[in-house]
Image (cartoon, rainbow, N blue to C red; front, side, top):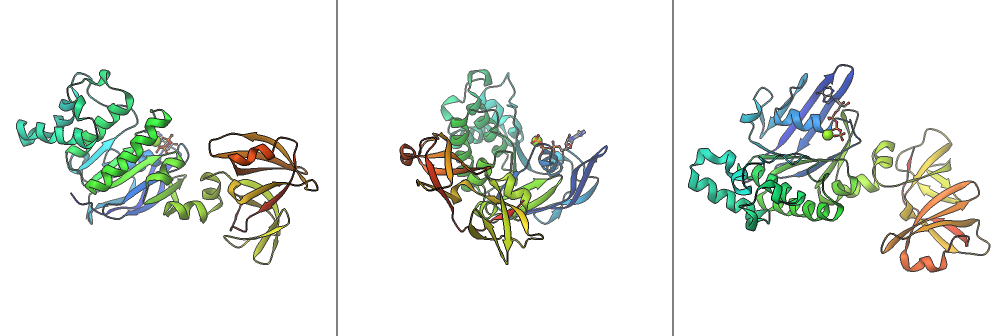
Length: 339
Ligand SMILES: Nc1ncnc2c1ncn2[C@@H]1O[C@H](COP(=O)(O)OP(=O)(O)OP(=O)(O)O)[C@@H](O)[C@H]1O
Ligand SMILES: [Mg+2]
């Protein structure tokens, strides 16, 4: 199975006064894994449903493998889907759920293929169980096996992990990526969990109000956000007052490069917590306010005059940074976006 290219061109879809899709363009390379990220209501599910043929666009085109499929019904679009809610048939075993859509191939072949798929997603041993005898994560594995069993040219995943607990979620997202790499199916994965999107995708599309704000590799989305919206939506940022000096912005006494030109002198700079260093200093202007243990890296908040600054520190340094400690705050000269 090799992936096909997918193109969404100028898609518009309104529901009453709501522009769920507002001239959405998205090009996906053959075999690519794209995560679509964005706040609730920005049109992610609508985009996926229009691509699948479950929803009509008011205008625009959907191309799969270069062919215009805009007018084709869902059952002729050759797409596998997995949704947020477990959507298995409750009265069928895992194996029967997976072989269900394959009956055209003949029973023997269908069962063999369904078994292979359950092995691929790591639950071959549970083939005879019914959905109520499986955990949420196992049920989503069955749903994934069912979606892949038809050898779809495109795999569509709409928040498939959001009903799972954090640990299972991470395991299954890594597994989805492994399987996708193995079978090479072009994949669109919708999530509003930024960590999930950054962790698994080849490229991340950040959507806002029915449009793509940026489509880029995870590191680029994080380090060089194209718009203030992307900068604030992806990752945590301190909002700190700054003064523009030439092509830099001065924040807390440090001149930082700008990601894009400023239009005024007094600005709000978005500074990542990992760009903030804090060290104990009797004559420092900062005071540690709180520390929160988060594993190997911890979070620390510091007041500097009226400002509240969030920093990340290695946890083994927390012992020297108890609340009340006077500290010096310095910023790494990483490029920053402006709000
Ligand atoms: N069938 C419908 N009827 C009316 N409005 C709809 C319908 N489907 C979606 N909408 C509206 O379109 C907008 C986009 O919805 P969509 O489900 O695509 O968002 P989403 O990005 O998937 O959000 P979430 O992260 O909450 O799942 C929302 O304002 C939603 O209320
Ligand atoms: Mg949705």
